[in-house]
Length: 576
Image (cartoon, rainbow, N blue to C red):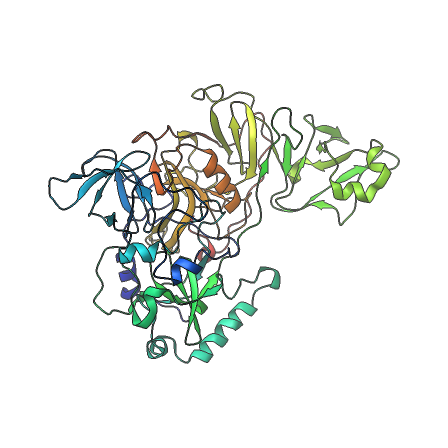
């Protein structure tokens, strides 16, 4: 529970292979990060069988058809897929440790003789014998990594994420003496952790353990070390690696107990004590899948309450005033309602009129709800989401595209001019300032140029902008899920560390709730091939990236934007 810093923490960063960030400085095209996102409630154990049984098969997934050809995998966290059979070729995407992809039967030796080039599905080449790539599915690193693969159908592909309180990081299970030398008395350490959890409001208290306990993974038994996924060699028998700094966010694949102490196994292959982390609570908020032509369901325009709850009003009995329906009936923050196309001007002010009476209100009103009673919400208490009247110049008639409105903090996904999905987002805390000098999201027209099931985002500490100011703290977030880069280091991605969707919160990226980020990832181009962890648009047969339009929101169809609420204190502002 004690804060740690210094050279050992920095050494931990030096062990990392590929990282990206969120903002103008990141060079994503050159280096796909460690890849991977957060996780929802515990799933039936992706850990259980293969993690614990060293004889686990690496064949097809349970219930899936057999593969169409021989398989290969990688023992490295990231292994490149090349457009052509050459290390000088462009990167088409990359694989993650423990994956399985179908390969061609024939191989061709690299000129260096150190590996053999082989084509993989659906396109591209890897060199078997280099960068961790291997056709030997019994490779110890492959067997260990294959115990946990990302769940690409879940809001969070990995079981849990946690924020470090200053945790020691190990390459194997530490001994009691090693733990005591770094954390002091175990009972006092646990008591301090429980006191820390008790300070949270019960409704927002993080769970003491983010992943169900299972047996010790086979490769960590009897003093065994975790497989080296990152490349740089550790001294033989090394245990302690470094301190993680307070605020560093790691992703967890499994939890197990050893000698009465719970540990997490991270996505990068480290062992960390569980009671040195605050586990992330996953936001339940998600957007609206809109009804298509001829279907029943919700349609635009809709309104969202963002900063505060919005009152639902109706005409008084004498028709001379608007009065609240009831103090206990409001549109809560992040709640939405359908409204009619034309606003109503009543008593000198503009109001949105509800198109559909919510079920809860209809039950309360009984027959009155069906007798023409009208309901309203003040325009300045909500943001309204309208359908676009024309598609972007670069969009074909039936092409999918995304529109983000910074002033309203909303996003709509279209097919042609038909709105398909609408939600709240969190753009940069610079709001509509200049993105080159602030943490604002850039405005303009873009296309997705790369997609990542998950990726590490990090940045070094930056000096204060003004004399006497506070430095911008370093950050590191492992395996941020469902990342789609569209301009430099700017991306759409999951934010599991906050639930303030509808308010600016990022360093310039477009933050989405876990469920919204997954939905968007599944509906944009290029598609990430099965078994791959990331892909680059337009390479090795990958499709053209989905079109994105980001507007400030100051246009004729926009209401005057409400100012965002002040950001939290500097030490609490999340990185992305």
